[in-house]
Every structure is written in structure tokens, then in C-alpha cells.
Image (cartoon, rainbow, N blue to C red; front, side, top):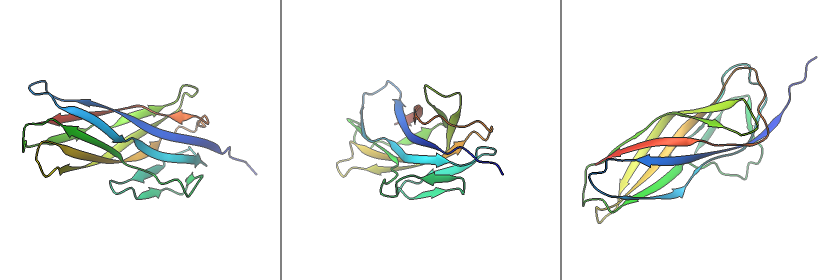
Length: 156
């Protein structure tokens, strides 16, 4: 009989915005990604945990939420000071989330975005959902906060 180590993880994504310098816009982070406190029961293969743009969460059988009262949250940003009624294109690249005390990592991919235009036409809200994937390398995860940079490109 074998026993798998259960590790409590807090997973949070941080973001960075990159845009062309032909005009100046202001980025305001309204809400960072929040996946909550999770337990990885088995990391012998890749397991997934998705938080969509509506905040709905779906986990695989080897990832458990520690606190059902913690609501996972997609990332949300406001981009303002845009030229009025600009056509917007948003691209988000996959990234890695790491912790200072661990050699292990998560991958954030299957990125989903929705852009909502403000009525006055000079600002937008960007909501981002994604899938968190374990490394699947068999290594355990340190009980720590995992974070990283989320590369976002906005063309307007």
C-alpha cells in the first residue's frame, strides 16, 4: 500500500501588459487570476484545472479545492485612455507559474479572452480565463504561492 503526499497550494497569476507605443493607454488590474488553495493528489501525469471567463471552475480527479467557499476568479483588466471606438485585438500567451521554494511548476494555457467595450468607447474591460496544468513529472509540489507573468498583447 502506498501513500501519496497531499500538498496545499495557493495558485495566483500576475500579469503584465505589452502594447504598441503609438498611443498611450492605461492598464488597471481589476482582479488577478485566483485558483484558490488546492491539493494535488497525484502528479504522475498532467492534470488540469480550468477557470473560465465566467469564473466557473472544473478540476480533474487529482486536483481538489481545499475551501469550497473560495471562489476561483478569472483575471480582469481595464484599459482606458484609448482612442475612441478603437478596434481592439488581444492576445495572451501561455506561461509558467513557479514558487520560490520548488523546482516544480504549473503551465497556464488554453487561454480564453473576452473584450467588453465601455459605452463611451474609450476604454475596454478584458476578462481572461485559462487552464492550469500540473507538470506531470512525478515531483511533489511545495506548499507555497505559485505565480508568474501573463504576457498580454493589445493592438489598437
